[in-house]
Length: 196
Image 1 (cartoon, helix red, strand yellow):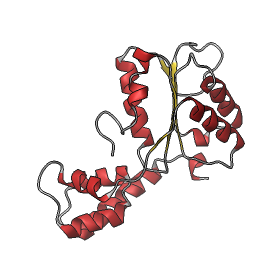
Image 2 (tube, rainbow, N blue to C red):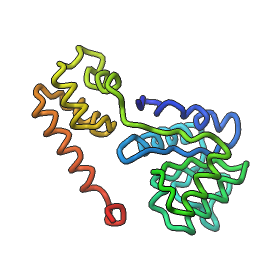
Image 3 (cartoon, helix red, strand yellow):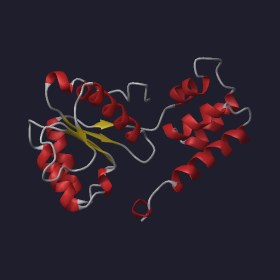
């Protein structure tokens, strides 16, 4: 479950400015909270005064900047190769979020380099107790039929659970409608390259 500070397991990234560079992979399927986790990482690094890049570095970029890259599974080979070189540099901070697509040779090389530095942080869909806690928001627990509908309609994906929780549905049909519209909204924001 993702908290205001980010998902569990981000401590090595958050402590990096005090302890030194870190290279870490945040892995998970679509909708599991990778982008949310990276936003928490970026906030923390920014709060600590670190300069950052949100892409593979290029000539002329600050060589000390932390590199925090989302959706690495969508990058082309040359970008992945540059990130792999950074992952192998113990003096650099690199945080990468990606879906695990091991058929891509360059992505696999990046993942392996990151895994040599730090075990990956793997995000999963939310379990029933976490969904129940999100829907209750610290208040009364949701009715069982609302929780069942939420588990079915969201599959535990944090962005869908958040949408349902924010809307405070009163019927299973409300839950399904809210989750459907949240999913449609997410798909509409995808670019063509992602949809391919």
